[in-house]
Length: 131
Image (cartoon, rainbow, N blue to C red; front, side, top):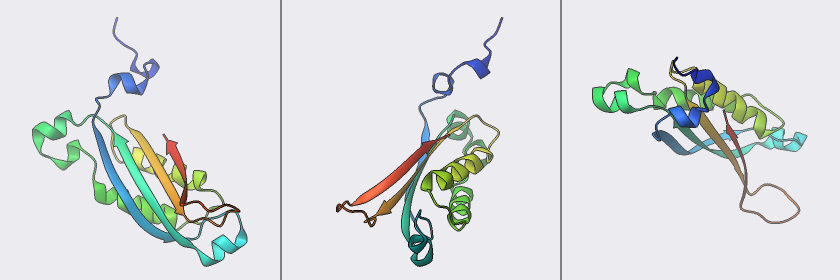
């Protein structure tokens, strides 16, 4: 009898390999308040993809990995669709990245809003979603 991989946590069957793209800067119009959606601001995205990179390391071929340019296109397209909360945007981005490969992957999307207009001074606020 073999393993039923659908019942095994992804972290147990995946290598510790990760691809990361950090500090993607995109001007967009997200926010709970109407004024945030009118004036917009720069957001910073960090994307991490946990996947098996053994084949890519051996083959030196892009189809065995994931294309960073495709990830950037997804980030730009999804950031252009205005949302009230960043959780919604991050989830959309994560799900779209998952379908870039036939591999089972885990995607972490962090979206930061620097100097948000809150009652106390803070450097940044972020939402991080793992799909």
